[in-house]
Length: 370
Image: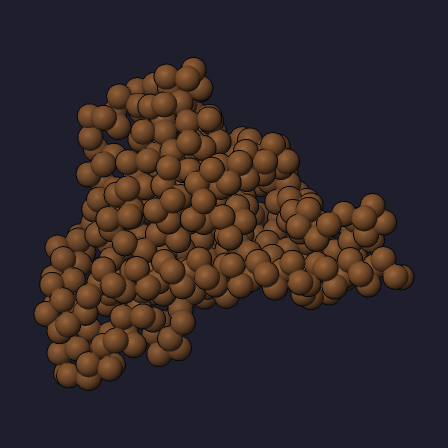
């Protein structure tokens, strides 16, 4: 690892890669990132898989077998994804074992079309947990209102969960409550708490994209001076909430029985605005017990020129409150911002899922006629 990546890991940040593909696995690229750049986990989503399957021929052999069996497009998509995730879990398994199960995790997301259906989300989580059948798997469940009880139920059944698409502090608090209740139910049901893991994926850059657009529309000097401050402040306040919950007596009772905290995971850390430093959503979000999942260009940027200054979250929490006060003062309704982002987030993944199914269907037809 470079000095920057070493410093990041030593500051308590788990370095994860926000990408997975059959080509990355087959070429040994993922194993190389684990070895050389300190990658200790992988996240995926429907958009990542859609892009992976749209390029190259890495999936053709399996597609040919699926076509020969007459598998429908939905099952085929799941077989393709779970094959990659199972392989990824095997690549990361040594990390999982070496960290006592803390890291070495690979995530797979439930069908995003189920984000507003609790019962079907739980059923899908169970199915994916069984299908991949690896102890270092995370099932990704969106933090929609309907997703909260699904998260609790999955954890209660001993399924490790990556809660995704968190934008608001209130929803994050509801996610942590679901985590604690899920573990309490798991304990009552005789589950081994030390074997249940979870992260809470708090999205970052999309907040700046939406808030900056609104600030530019307001156009006053006070408003434009706040560009690029909302997302990092929002994440800093999420960490403040994390410290409060996981410093509570309620948590300590679970911890005494082997439970691990639900770590905050900073997601959407690729910089969207080219005028911003390309490492900002990493170097400004350094805190003990956190995860940062990065697209490879961001990982490379941090490795090359990221300046790690130790804990950049805890000392900045008072300033984060000030930023939110100033944003409200110029007319930014942060509650509306995060509501819009949650709806857009689910819709984007639904669109990617539809494109993925369309691509798989085309390839199944092509393989079937070959």
